[in-house]
Length: 237
Image (tube, rainbow, N blue to C red; front, side, top):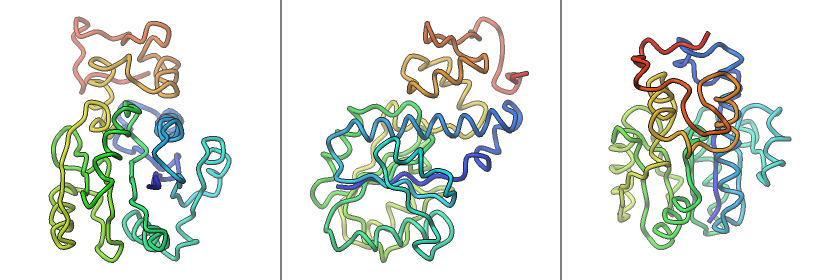
């Protein structure tokens, strides 16, 4: 099994966090979360190889630091998340390995979850890890036919279930405490800092402490529920 982490250029990521983080903070958060995902995958013994799929050549050093190989969309003659992923899967198909596609914004992903997902996807099973809202796909693992288009994006979970049925594959949809928590909006970051501060990856936890949301020493949110902040009111100055 090989792993793939698709990622945008950090300075272009997480625009929906603009109401709570400035441009530099958003870019730093994207990098920290990506590093945490790569760290977890690198520590796992499940993968023969890990690819960082991107359109930014500047990510090569980060990929190498975490034992991954940077693959540029231009190398695959593909543009955009799903076409590039399908092109990479097609390139790897001759090796006969299952894939493990994990988004780069899963800072609560745990190594035990990676092992569980990879084990479940060893046979003909395709495992879809949904987001915590039950609509998106945070991780897809298994022998996906690259000629069947991937559907990451809005309502991707239902679309991937349908696409898996076209392959006559068995599908297992799961929600996991860490793997199902992606960070897209201010509310996601706020609630994760309240509910799961100790389970943030090392890089994300350090960054949130640096910008004033999380105490990196105590792994506790600096803002508590008793402070009467709502997700809409929570803005870092």
